[in-house]
Length: 355
Image (cartoon, rainbow, N blue to C red; front, top):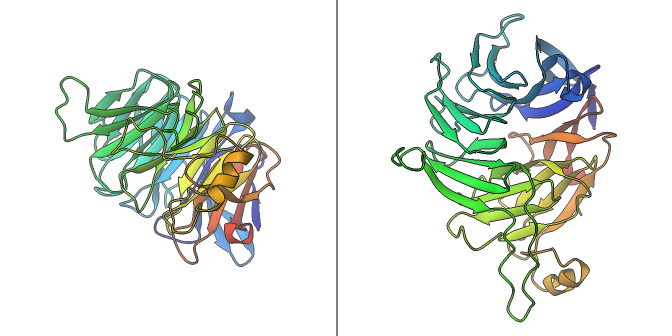
């Protein structure tokens, strides 16, 4: 396990470069993001450990970072002052572009993985904005009417995006639809809907709504989205059946789940980071042979388990809230990076933890 210390700055987000297997970006904030500066680190993985190749300081806290899909040296940051900044790591000190339209903290930025010419930001001001890096103003604003902690483009379509927010709903937007009535909103799925009861089993107990903090699209099954948040449960949904409730429920974390991300290599594996200071690897039970006979035993262990998924391993080396986690796209599947409020970035192989 490799370690890097973000001295004086508490980690909020970590992302592997889509162009280089040895480059990682980390967004961090002084004073846990409550007040003070932000810093984005560009870290290199070398035979001698992790080295800081470069860093940029910002006036306000940073809550998220994402790499450009069209330019190997550029990355975006989400700022506590409502700004979205584009940095070029070949240049010094200042961003090459800054956009200031959000009225509250920006908590997520995400680059379009298919079209590669647009990106989005989501904010506590209840909006998602679509941007082009060459345009000075946003292209589109999508209202969610609630504090939006996470937004993403689908990795399978240039015009479909999703968000989760404080009102416990997963929203799907399609930019191809007419803007008029619903602002491109096509689905609004209540995350706290209980799963459909199994045959012969008692109906699931309703779960009260709670803030959804994170979500991610499956990289292989283009209609499957995982969500997680304050109620400690990871859920997966199939957007083809928006009223059916979750297709899998994965309990286990002891505090809120801050980040969830699907494996780029395996269709059923996901990774989570939580305020309980652990990062955990899960299967959602969709792969052949998972669940099956054991399903009935698991029901007796924990009535919240649904769909045959299970925890496969955990990494408990963080000593404060684990806030960010990401998979390496290259090489052997299983390498990932995590960051947290303990001022550390850890790079580790989750296969060593899986059983």
